[in-house]
Image (cartoon, rainbow, N blue to C red; front, side):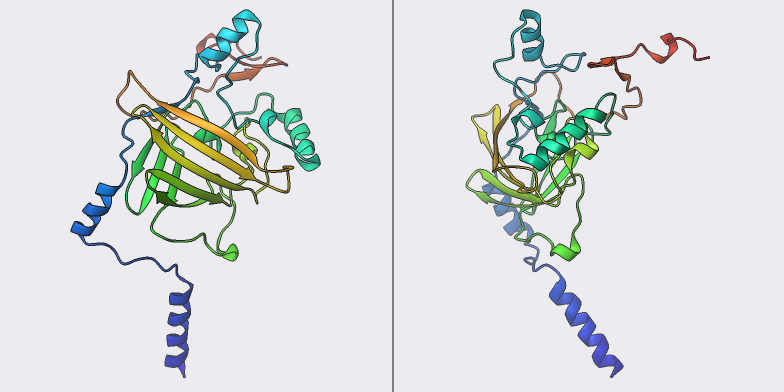
Length: 268
């Protein structure tokens, strides 16, 4: 009886595990690699060569002339979303508390539209997307599905599965924690939002991303964004910083930069 119960438990666990293909032989895996694109180097959000003040060169140029930038590099920020009443309520709450908030990274989806450089590591089993804040996305392309609802929970980077359609990586991401919780510039979407992406290289120095966000809790309809990366020049490796000298302060209207610690007035 005990042996039968143990066997039943083992079978149940086996049935619950994801059905993944057996590991390929080295030769077969080499053939799989040969079919995949190679997106080498480091990449920056197009039109977002950021200055020390936190604005892009496009925004700085527009600020100097008093005009609005013709091309806004940040496509995933709140003003571009088709908010419903719940979304507008969340946005109003965010604006009350956003001043002087700081972040430990970009999180998803903002890391796909942020100022930090990113790189792509493509293998037959998964594609890794990594940025300078050590944000990491695992996009599984080995045939697995999303975990069952009882086996997943919202995280900063969500759960991503994908497949290749020629040279285009097609990705579906779910279980993303409200992006605004981790990064103060993120849109206050619900934990139930679905993110669909199509990522491809165009030419040798440009990667384009079509992103569609669906979230009936906060949006009136699909939120469609066209994102793009350009190849970074001037540096040849990813540098990760611990960001222990964050001097962001809020002056009542805007975030600004405080003097270095050794130049700040003494507190009494």
